[in-house]
Amino acid sequence: MLGKGSKLYSIARLKCPRCHEGDLFVNNSLLSWSKMSEMHPNCPVCQQVFEPEPGYYYGAMFVSYALTSGPTLAVVWLMMLFSDEITLWMFIGALLVSLLLFLPAIFKLSRAIWINIFIGYDPTAASSPQARGH
Ligand SMILES: [Zn+2]
Image 1 (cartoon, protein in one colour):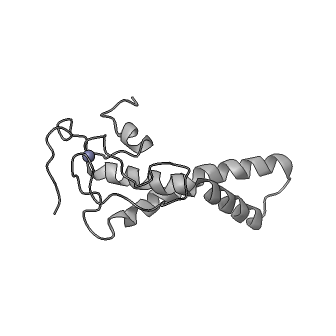
Image 2 (image 1 turned 120 degrees about the vertical axis):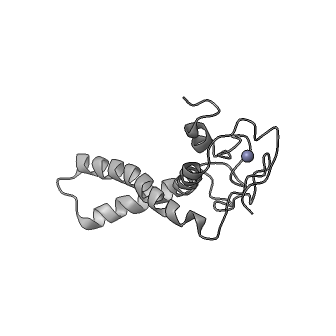
């Protein structure tokens, strides 16, 4: 399931959605803050365009909301073990803590998921480079 050719592989390893070989990000580490938002304009392997149009990743914001809710609920659940009531401020605190911890991962994963919705795996892409888009 996590092998090359599945969307999960491309998303979890932040690889090009088309050839599953080139990196999506300049710094392809999920936990690193350095150059967090810098993507390669094209796939270094198959030349797939990673940002076909300006604002392409606007929709990835909604994916990141969904990804943020997981860690946030986990932190809220932890607080409920130690406290009888959860106030709004505690909830906001939980949100901030999980954002601080997971922001680079959430940012990169949501973009990887987003581009995978629109671009599918092409097993021949890595061997016969051909630019798409533009
Ligand atoms: Zn590629």
